[in-house]
Every structure is written in structure tokens, then in C-alpha cells.
Image 1 (cartoon, rainbow, N blue to C red):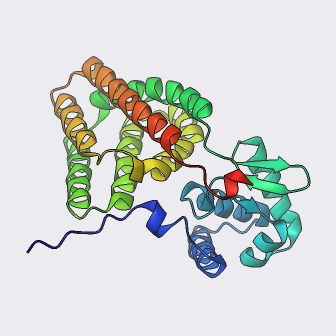
Image 2 (tube, rainbow, N blue to C red):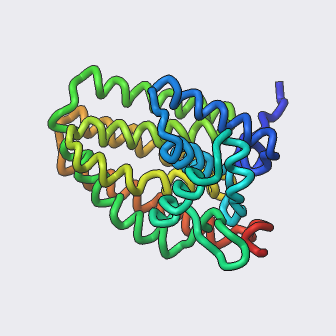
Length: 257
């Protein structure tokens, strides 16, 4: 069979959500908060809006109206505004005079600074994880790599992006350092958004899978300093690809307003 598989990218799956699709995405996410027992309205609004921004359901430059968010979330405007103020302090949204809140655009200079931090932290996490991970935990990394290969075979770049995020996050978990985990968490979601936003404008990430295999092989060999160097180099190459893609992309309609 010569039928070509359609590549699944954010442009064709998440950036074009209408309000009903967005409401469904919010309801699905809020149901996970119900399971976890999170009932505080400002926190629910904060987590839901941040998750939608992370997954490009609210794309860069999109206006975020308090009234619409309150209606979709099923709450008053007060907790929504509290959540937007918090998101503004964290760099997820911006307050524009006479326009209101918008989703913060992806800015090359900001991403450069975040990557400079994460490159170093990923290296530290890899070094610690090499000394602390069990054989079974390393096998879980192998499983994630195999799932990445399957996603690429199906041209499912959305699934690949999620699995790539899981791979790096699991290495941080294996470092068994809660302070490191907290610092990485404060930055990694912005990088996930950038990877998702640019994935259709970058080369197919087969090279990333090759590097993931090499990183795991050196972890199994018990060489922590080599793992640190490889992870930092891996992140540096990804940074270059993403920044080049971002600079080559046309601005979205929302960002030109």
C-alpha cells in the first residue's frame, strides 16, 4: 500500500478550536481536578486556563475574556480574574490596555533564557538519575522511546511531543530531588508549548529519538557525567531548531491585532 499517512500537528488539531470545542476541553480537564479533590475556584480556573495555554487550545496572542472564561468554567468572574492575574505574574498572559488579557506570545529571547536554564538542569537531573535509577525505571525510559518511534511511524507529532515531554520529565523524577523538580516544573511547560507550536515547522524529530537511545545507553552504562553532557547537548540542539522555526513562522492572526 502506498497511501501516505497524514501528519498530525497542532495546526490541524488544536489551534482551531471553536468555543464549543474549548468548552469540552475545559470540562475534560476539570473532571481530572474533581477526581483529585481540587475544589477551590481560583485554583481550578488557574489550572484549567494554564493547561489550555500549554496545549495551544488558547494559542499565543488569543484574547482571554473574563466573561467567556467564567461561562465556560461555570463560575463567577472573580475567581477567573484572580487566576488571570496570577497567570500574568508567571508570564502566561499579558494585560493589554483597552483590550484585556491575551495569551502571551512565544518570544525568542524569552525561550532562549528558559532553555539556558533547562539545559543545565536537565544535565544535573540526568547525572543524578544515572546513579539513582533502578533497572526497571530505565526500562520505562526504553518503553517511552519505543512509543516515540511508533508515534513517528504514524506521523503523529502531537503524540510524539507528549512522549518527548514524558521522557525528559521522567529523568527529572528519577533524580529524586524535589527542589530540582520544582524549578524544572516552573519552566518546562513554556518549553512544551514552544515545541508543540513549532513542531510542524521543524524537521521530523527522528534525530531526537536517536539521541534519546544514546542517552539511555550511557545511563545503563553508569556514566553520569557523560549523561549530563549528552542531555545538555540534546537540549541545545532542540533549542536551535525551535528558535529557527519560530523566527521563520508567519505571525498568527491574533498576534497581528
